[in-house]
Length: 196
Ligand SMILES: Cc1cc2nc3c(=O)[nH]c(=O)nc-3n(C[C@H](O)[C@H](O)[C@H](O)COP(=O)(O)O)c2cc1C
Image: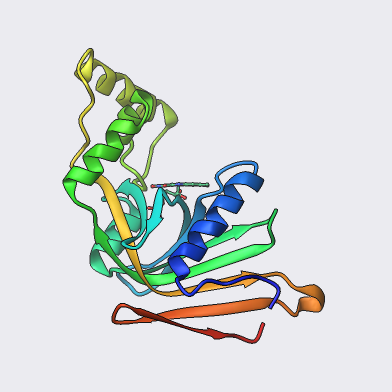
């Protein structure tokens, strides 16, 4: 084995994320999020994982977007981190749940005012006739809130992906990569090595 592994994969994710934070030039917490459309077609896009702990991996989005609608319809999802600088990958599978309004409000408040206004102005994933329409919408939202604080739109929140599978991959020589897969039964994690 060319990497140390932990009995608890959540601690291992934490360690790898810290390493990625120190070595990636940007967005060390970016992961590809895969969902299934209502028609059962796989769809993938990047999101920022804002926390990863015993509860799961949390990301934020517009609930009326393609991914939001997909997840509200079918809550099975997977995410995949890849760090070029580390030659490492983590795959996670599980079920997502909407986070509480309280947690979503708390995170929304940490965002810049411009991002808060952007959340209101963007009908994420809907067709946009021209960019000016978006800029006009931003302007009208700015006017609407003027000197007030921008409250979180009800259509914008977070999902938490609670993992039942976490796989760690590290590049090895001659393509003899290291892979270790953790699966959860009840509260217990079991692990096995996988052929590369
Ligand atoms: C590095 C990176 C991070 C991103 N993070 C988020 C995110 O946290 N939330 C989000 O809604 N979109 C994020 N996006 C944009 C999405 O990839 C996507 O374009 C958008 O959410 C619309 O996806 P959908 O139509 O499948 O819902 C990110 C894009 C990149 C490249």
